[in-house]
Image (cartoon, rainbow over all chains, first blue to last red):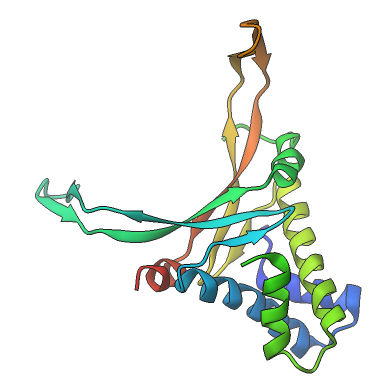
Amino acid sequence: MALTKAAMAEKLFEDMGLNKREAKEMVDLFFEEIRLALEKGEQVKLSGFGNFDLRTKNERPGRNPKTGEEIPISARRVVTFRPGQKLRARVESYVGHDE
Amino acid sequence: MTKSELIEAIAQKQTQLAPKDIDLAIKTLLEQMAQSLSEGERIEIRGFGSFSLHYRPPRTGRNPKTGDTVSLPAKYVPHFKPGKELRDRVNG
């Protein structure tokens, strides 16, 4: 099972007593505001969790893996996530299955 | 944008709730996300992206000061893969 927006809204309903509509709106706004900042080219720093950074990539040569045809990969801006120390430390000790 | 600026931006749009409730809500959500990952559970947000854990096998490292070798155990690191909507909007 994965954590989804529905489970996040449910958490706000249970822990804080927000009504279901408020809870859903809050979760939607949370992700939308992060997207808006990144869209504007602004880094997002959530202390204790991590940073969403933007990187610009130059055009580079690529290849269609099916046909082998050479096609350039256009210049683009991408989002990267850099987990903070605290999140890294919490996750590091997870004892799971090897992937 | 920092966490407190994010909370302010949400407060501008969500005027039904007191700013302190928005502050608590955002901190609750971030804690839930961190907790989920620390239990090995993925996070999947359509239009935003997904967070998962990547395995790092054990390796032998070196103390850069003393040159001593140290064995570093296997670990997991958080990984984020942006979703299509986020990729498209950021590259717009």
